[in-house]
Length: 229
Image (cartoon, rainbow, N blue to C red; front, side, top):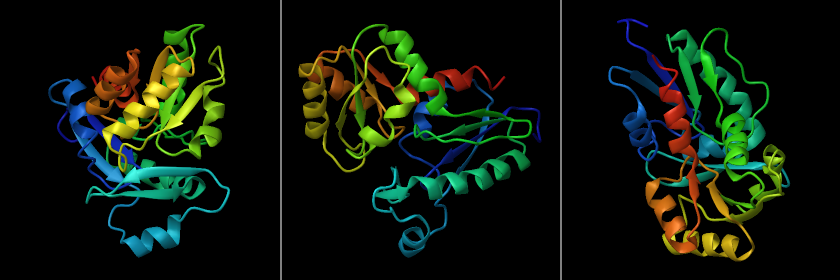
């Protein structure tokens, strides 16, 4: 840190800054906290992204947002490899808390001194504690993620129900339909399992389903605010 104020680093798997997520984060942070935002895809052209991070058949996927507002589907394993370098970059710049802006499950990420906040380690147990024995319904951006990301929710009392609606490519009607379907399938609480979902999405899902709805990035923002002191 250069001026005595806390320095928070964030890493998106897309391109930084994230115009959808950073306002939610900034609203939760105490006054005086500085932030540095980086993205795995920063400075890369569409062809660069395709050559380095193109999805592979049958392999786990992630979806994210680019600076122009468009979305891109990426190979999860390739993204995980790139995250290590971005974490080291932020730590070298003086960040004392580093937040990964993705709810995907990653393994082996580490820092030397900084606090590393990984949503996949926080959101599932929080959802489990909130839901208790109740059935949880999860809204994921891609239908393929319903299977690939299911393992991180193993602590839930019941196997979660999943429906897909993208915060980037689908309209609110698709999201509302997914929320209603989860309710009709027996869900009693909804979790929006992507950092790209924002308050507008939560409001739509809750309105359509009538169920308590947890927004992952809002939950994480509130917790991170407790670390940057």
